[in-house]
Image (cartoon, rainbow, N blue to C red; front, side, top):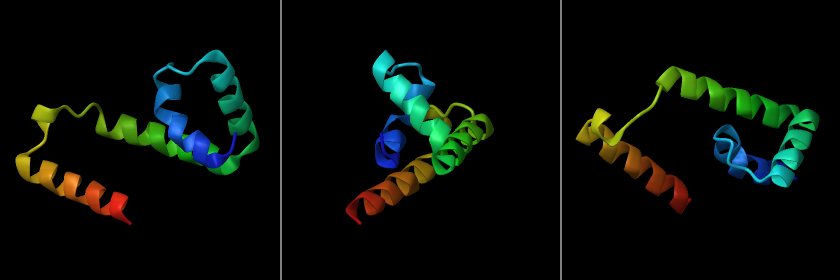
Length: 76
């Protein structure tokens, strides 16, 4: 597994939704890659800091700004 694949699978890993063989490769990569270890740690810290956002818990203005930022990011 490379770092790009790792990043794509982080959410599924944290949700316990990876097939056993993919999870094994994920954990093996994590053990060998300090960059991905930091990325996973940052991801966990972000989740802990923000809690769970629901569609109703964000203002319409913040929603528009976030959607705009993601659209612009994807376009690059």
